[in-house]
Structure formats: structure tokens, C-alpha cells
Amino acid sequence: MKSLVGKARWTGAIAVAAALLLTGTGAGAAAADPTPDTSNGTAVGWRALGLAVSPEGTKAYVVAADRSGGRTPVVLRTVDLRSGAVVAELPLAEDGDAGKPVVSQDGRRLYVVVADRLVTVDTAAGTVLSRTSAPEQERPAGWSAGALTGLAVSPDGSRVYIGQNGPAGAGQGVRPGRVLVLGTDRGTFTGTLQLRGYGVSGLALQAGGATAYVATDLGVEHLDTTTAVPTPLLPVERLGATGELAASPDGLRVYALGSQASAGTGYAISTVTNSARPVFTFATAPADLHYVSVSPDGGRLYLLKDSWTPQAAVLAYNTATDTAVPGETLTGFGLDGVSATAVVPGGHTLLLAGIRGQGSYLRTVAL
Image (cartoon, rainbow, N blue to C red; front, side, top):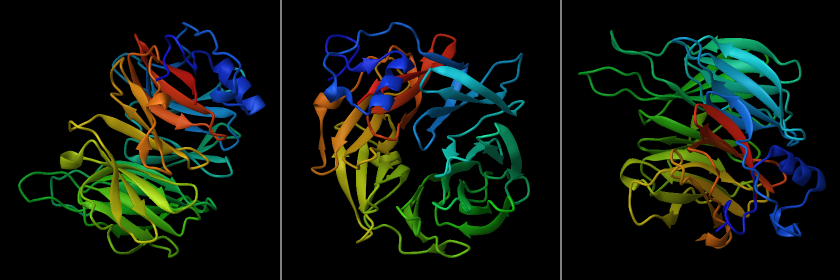
């Protein structure tokens, strides 16, 4: 196990990550472990809500909530990973909540759900291009529209897919959620697909973008995304309620975290057979597992355990053998809790955003 004590490979300052990025070396190539830095890291706001990394791996985008009187303004902060400095701040909303941002493959656009709107950011200019409200959701009188949830961007950047929960109300049963399609050329919603499940969580595009997987409270739905409006394919076999999803770089697998009754279990979905099998299970459920991600080479699966505690740990799994790699577990982040993670392209560095005292900080882990 790697920690801040003893054989730590965890770097407390983003400047150390900069050296890793510039040299292309990972923790295993280092001659000696760096001396742990006791500083908190780079301050990114009151509460970090989501984190993304630019495709070339030189910038981190942190969506954070600040405090201003009784309001919680939402701000996008850009961190230069070569210097560890916040180089840009962009207000996104005067008050509210936000989700995890997603960056297009060319790095020119960033998308994030803020309250009930999809916000589009020009990353080069550092400006908001649009704030687009979701189309009206059919629902009984007195019910509220479902929350916008997961995001995915097509490889060519022409479409953004957004999950939305079913409408919320009382006394008349549940209504299904849906997937919305935004055409980026006009910045308008161009299609809607109703799902079977009410709760919509993660979205993952298979490598190449021809199909998508959507996690719901009734299981994972498989969609054909070559059409203007996604077309339902057969649901993934042998898989119940699920939460977060992550696709492998080779397009052969999608990893899913179980939720509700299957909490604590992770599944590998074969994109060839459309079936799922468990690849890890914790002895006790529910387990606090979040932020599933796959290394750029596909060799490791990373998960964050006990995220909202000082005991937060990043677990590593070998995707070739479907076995845990205890020696690569990362702990001792010096934070009171971790709210977001992202693997930096290149695969040698993991970013963490988390709480320390009255603020949130961005820190790095050498993998």
C-alpha cells in the first residue's frame, strides 16, 4: 500500500506532477520516493464538485462551489499542471449546484451541468458560450422535472449526450428517465430517447462512439448512437441497478459500479456479447465506491473507496486478470474527504480534489 507514511509515492505538490508529465516517467521509474509535502495543494474553492483534465494533460478544470453570504456561486477554475497555479476563473452561476465536467476530445469545449442547464465553455477563450435549458419533460401537474445527470461527448464533438432522471412527484408512481442529445453546431437539443429506468446515472460511449451505455436503476441500457436520436439495443444481460460507468480504451469492455442491492460490486460488460460479469465484490455492502476510471492503456481500473472520510483510498485492479492489486492501493492524501478524481493522459498521474478544513484543494498522486 502506498501512503504518505513510509514508502509513499504520493506527491503533495502539483509541481511534482509537472515533472512526471514532462518526463513521462511514472512512480515505478523514480530513483527515490519524494519527500511528502505537508501543504494542502492548490486551493480551488470552498467545495470541489467535479474535475476534468485537458486531452494533452497540461490543465485541470475544477468546477467548485464558493460561499458568498447565503449563496453558493459555481465557478470553473483552470489549473496549469506545469506550475500548479490557478490560471483562470470563470463564473458559471450565481447560485446552485453542478456536476462533473466533460471535455471534448479536441480540448476546445468543456460541458458541465449547472442546476437545470447545460453550460458550454470555450476553453481557449475562457468564456461561456451558452447556457441551454433542457427541453420540457412530460409530467403530471405539480411534479418537478428530473435532475440532469451524466454527460458524454461524441468523439467528433458534434453531439453531447445528457442523462435526465424521471420527473419527481408523489402518489402516481414513477416516470422513466431519458437521454437528451445536444447538437453542438447549433447549441440546441435535437433528440430525446425515453429509457426504461427512472434513475439515470452514468453515461459511457464505446471507443469510436458508435454505441453508448446508460446506467439506470433497472440496469444498463445499450444504445446505438449512429442515428440522430439514439436507438435502443438489447439491455445488458445479468445486470441490475447500476451507478457509474467507464469504458476501456480498446472498446471491448465497459465497467459498471453496482448500486442499491448490488452496492460494493463492480462488473465488466462485454461489448461483444452484451453480457456482464462481476469482477470484484466487497464482503460488506453497501460499500462507498465512486469515480471508476480506466488507465489510458487499459491495464488498470481505479476506484475511490470511503471518499468522504480521511481514510479515502484509491483501489487498483488489473483488468487483464480481474484481480485487485493491493500493492498499488493509494492512501494518506492529507484531506478530510475526496470529492473528485481524474486520470491524467499518459497514465502516470491521478488528480484528486478534496476537502481540507474550510476549503477544497487539488492534489496529485503518482501511479
